[in-house]
Amino acid sequence: MTLLRVEKLAIDVLRDEGAHRLVHDADFTVAPGETLAIVGESGSGKSLSALAIMGLLGEGLQVATGAIHFDGHDLLGLDPRRMNELRGSDIAMIFQEPMTSLNPVRSIGHQLTEGMRLKLGLSRKDAQARAVELLTEVGISEPEHRLRQYPHQLSGGMRQRVMIAIALACKPKLILADEPTTALDVTIQAQILALTSRLCRDHGVGLVLITHNLGIVARYARNVAVMYGGRVVERASARDLYARPMHPYTRGLLSSVPRLDLPRDMPLTPIPGAPPDPMQVVPGCRFHPRCAMADGTCAERVPALEAHDAHEVACWHPDRSGSPIRKAVA
Ligand SMILES: Nc1ncnc2c1ncn2[C@@H]1O[C@H](COP(=O)(O)OP(=O)(O)O)[C@@H](O)[C@H]1O
Ligand SMILES: [Mg+2]
Image (cartoon, rainbow, N blue to C red):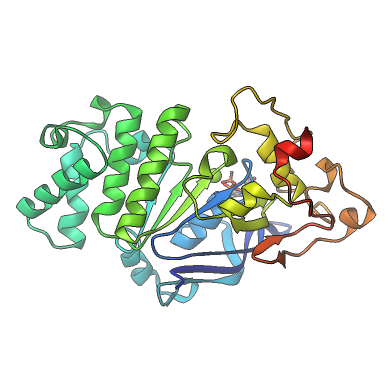
């Protein structure tokens, strides 16, 4: 069963000289209770894809082609009022920096119960009781006391836990979490990601987890879509992607980040060069200027996402060695 299906999504920025494409043909799906990680360096189009799903692309940006199906709705065809209703009830979002999404002058209790009273029609007393339950679920002790506190009185990790509680409060079917833990240290990041994906699984909520850190998502995501330069370049189950990364970019990412599943003293190898300027047109595969495998074809023709069993990759020279990256490098 599919909860969210994004098909051939293209997003343009409109400029005086015409439309310029920032996201090309993005394809991914999420099932209820399942976590999909969207991974890629900064500027690869992850946030734009999430904003398109929420119907929140800013001024000057538009979905050029493609389809977004969510729980029986065609989101791109939905009238703005209905989309507004879905947002915050069926679809919730968790942002990177909770200090900017939490209101500093409202108590945690107020922010947690507001949506439940408005959207679920709960009484003050019932909303309060459920708020205590939710804070307990996200691992916050003395919940009654915390409800009376204000965001600045909580640690960064605690605030992110509150954000998860707020996201779950209105019983959404889908949560989009955009770099939810980037501001936190790695140990807390791992705890928060584990908690978020476990709660989503327990509640049957689909989770889109956006991150630039491929090293930490493996354990928490069922599926991974790797984005580069506005395109999905590899898509597979997390298990398969880690065991047999096929795209040179994914292999590069895996060798350049610390991983929880490998010894800490493994040397890291950065990917040479920098991500492409999204306003610049690069012919062929967008990764070719940084790729050791690149040849004339790569510089001229854009590779399409092709399936190798259940593992999809957009590359003219995918690695078929079936080896995890560390062994290939050693
Ligand atoms: N309104 C805009 N106008 C021009 N370029 C934009 C706009 N919004 C985003 N971009 C560009 O699109 C690219 C993808 O953005 P984004 O989805 O935010 O990347 P990320 O993967 O880091 O979340 C970025 O390089 C960004 O500069
Ligand atoms: Mg982003």
